[in-house]
Amino acid sequence: MSSNNQRNQANEAKKSMKKVVVRKVKTTVIDWNQDAERLILFADIMGFKERVINTSHAQLKKEMESFHDKLDRQSSPLKMSDKLRFAQFSDSILVVANGVDETMFNLISKAAARIIHVAMSEGIAIKGVIAQGKFTYDKSKELYIGKPLVDAYLLHDEIKYYGIVVHHSAEKTIKKYASDNSNPYTNTPISLEKGKTEHYHLCWNMMDLFLAAKDNTEECMKWLDSIAETVSGRPRIYIDNTRSVLKEDQKLINERKIEKGADAAT
Image: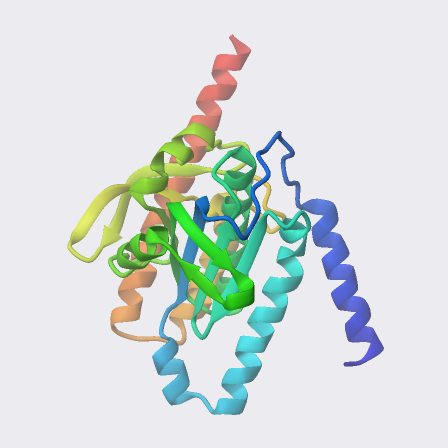
C-alpha cells in the first residue's frame, strides 16, 4: 500500500473519530465470555449469489475487500470501548452489543446506520434486523449462538426493502431510547413478503455520514439510483419499496421535529 493511501486511511479514521458522537451513560459491565441478554444486528448483502456467478473471483474479492476495509475504518470509533463487536462471514454481517441499556442501543443503532451507509454508497444493497435476547459471543471458538440470531434471520428473510427492521424482541428497548435527535426510528408500514405492515425500523436516511440525526435523504436516493442502473426485474421492486419507506420516514421525522419546535416555542 502506498504512503499516500496509508495517510488517507489514517485521516479518514481520525475524521470519523472526531465526528461520530457516542453518548456516554452509566452502563453495566458484562464479560464477553458470559452468556447475557444482548442486542444483535444481523445484516445480509442482497444479490450476492448473482455477484458470485456474474463477477470474476478477482473482481468480487476486490469489491468485498473494499467494502470490508471501508466499514472497518469508519466503524472503528464505535468499537473503541469493546462494547460492540463485528463478525462477517461471506455475505452476512453480525454485530453484537454487550448488553441492552442505552449505551448499547446507541451503539447498535449507529452500527446499523454505518453498515447500510457504507454498503449502499459502494453499490451494495443490504437489509437487516435488530433483535434482543440471551446470546453467546465467543470469538475464540467462533461460537455465535442464541435465539436473537434466529429471530433476526427469519424476519430478515421476509423484508422486501433495503433497511434495518426491529424484531419485536427489541421493540421495548427501541421505544425506550429512540430519539429523532440522535437515533431516529419510526413505526410506519414497511414492505414484507406478504404485504405491508407497521414495524419499527431505523430511519437510516435521517442520519448523515457522521451518524448525526440529519436529513440525508437526497444522498440516499442517489445511492438507490446508482444501484437501479445495475439491475432489472425483482430487484427494482426492492428499490421502489425502499424509496417509498425513505420518503415516508423523511416526511414523518421532519413533521415531528417541526411540532416539537412549535411546542418548545409556546
